[in-house]
Image 1: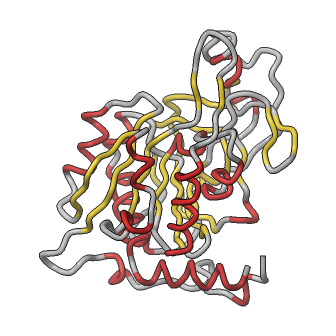
Image 2 (image 1 turned 120 degrees about the vertical axis):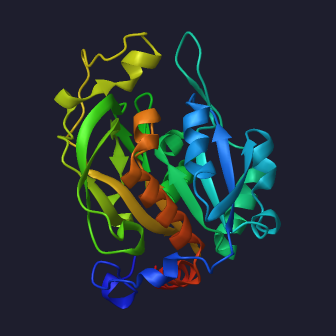
Length: 294
């Protein structure tokens, strides 16, 4: 990647809040993509039902895969994804499978066209057999030991219902008006491609193996909340970032596991502002410039 001095850099430039707010009477039109991971549907959809500045359509996998084309994306301001396809859980080791080729081609074409994505929580675990997805996200949660970016890695760690403090990492339209706040949520000890992302949010939780449980122990051995015989290096405390995928702006927020997080007013505000920023001409211009400089 080119030196960040050569591209628009949100670390050094605060952006006016006016880019975040739709004109009076207008609503952003988003496609909300779900399935692949259980969740409290009423609590989750209330986040969007309670936002008067957006309207949304919900589509689930596998039908959702046909929506990933530039032509379909042009009908929406932004795709918001809360999905985790590409994994089949059973009594033994999870089975991983790649997406169909038409989906890959469509998503790549969306990247070229600059179609924005806002990715939430367990999206980082999606499509483990397709390494390009981790590059789109900017990180990867691993249910079993496997390679990430060509390096052998242990399975990732999780801890549910953790109360931790979230702080903005920089001034940005997504973090506008956000002071450090507490949230009860699931945290991950997983791969974060720090050199490929621009930080938005950090956590004060200790990202070390003693504070997490082994994903493989849970899904293979049925041992929930166990870190027996599990070893994982210390990880990143980044829990939110922005990046580009080709010409498309991408936002990833690790927050958002369950009802306590759904109700958190700061999480709701961050998500709303993420949708508005990703949908803006400013975000698309930023992603294009970043792509040119890469």
